Amino acid sequence: MEFFKNPNINWMGKIKYFVTLSVVLLLIGLGAYLHDGGLLYGIDFRGGTLIYVRFANTPPIAKIRSALAQEGLGDSTIQSVYDPSNPASKNDVMIGLKETGSVTTRLDAGRAAIMDALSKTFSGPAGKRDFNAATPSELAAYLTRQDPLHLGPVVGDKYKQLAAALTHYRDSDSGGLVHTLADLKTVPGVTPAVVASLQQGFYPGSYVIRDVRIVGPQVGKQLRRQAILATLYALAGMLIYVAFRFEWVYGAAAVIAVFHDVLITLGFFCLFHFEISLTVIAALLTLVGYSMNDTIVIFDRVRENLRLMRREPFPEIVNRSINQTLSRTILTSGLTFLAVLVLFLLGGRVLHPFAFAMVVGVVVGTYSSFGIAAPIVIAWNKYRGLPSSRGAGSGSGGRPPKARAADRRLATAGRR
Image (cartoon, rainbow, N blue to C red; front, side, top):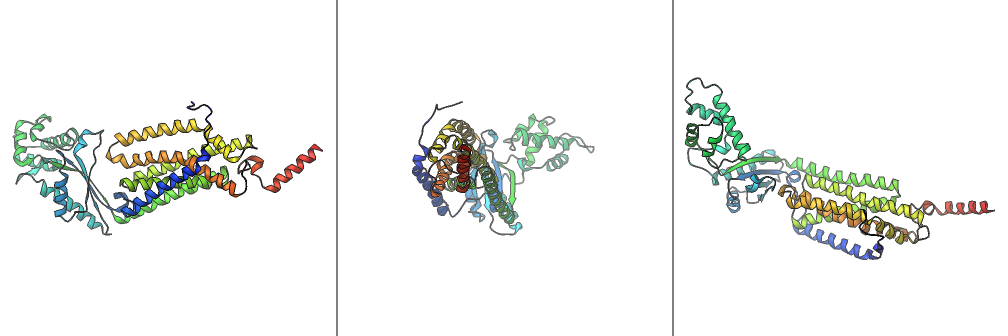
């Protein structure tokens, strides 16, 4: 499929605009980095505590923040984690507590302080327990004592089975929250007497702890170091591959372009205050491969055209190669961009950082293939004094001068 029929765009005549755009984006990212004091690392890298809480109604963010401040946790972060694909999560929030120490017990203390602040702020009637926080064993023990079904001394496993059915209904059918205990009457085996008994000892809490994640600071530092090494190893491997397939200048140009893509993407993360997590590192590594693949496609066409257009100036060959692959670039990059854009818009809060990295990376990675990588190769050939097609990888044109002189002598001898 071709979107353009024989396009003739002078890409290399606009190098100064490409360089200016890249410099501006890099400076914006640097300014955001300096303003924020560095990248905003997620719990995976900085260490700390994350508690996911689901509320029965719209979360009172101001009330939660005030309660945490009273417990000395004023620096905690609170954000919504609504996932459109899961309507039950519309009232979910994530409470994060950064940990700068090195003692694991301090992380446990932070978790206990957050849970204590929530318990004090959203406590229920005195003398009753929160049904939404009760375990199956607690419910079974309570029902056994109350014996609402009048089973007598021989209870057996009846109340254990009933407690399991109640918690399954709460966790699966009600999304972890039962709004009113009267709803429990729909559970098989639950009679009005059982509901009445539960109402005497329990109340439906206004929130429930969905998940607790704790990452020690040492583990966070180790993950951060491994993520940096993984990115550098990927760049080094691609440099070796492209240098082997073409010449080292092509590999260097491709790696510089990819490094440029990663820096701009990280700059946008600083600008829009997205956290760097393990999923974002996965997106960056995906971006590295995607951008490198697009660059190799253009370089491969340049190498082919160098054999066919020996007398043409090298910038003209690069222009022709980019124009010949333009339809392929628009097709693949456009479809990829639409896919990750939909993921960013509809994928939910949790996937936002990952999808954002992909959206920015696809755009910047496509642009850098012709706006950064190709101009670097042209600049290198010009520096070597090869303004025409005698660039690297051009068959005999890329051979040393002595070899080319020998070829000419052999050709003359053959004519004789």
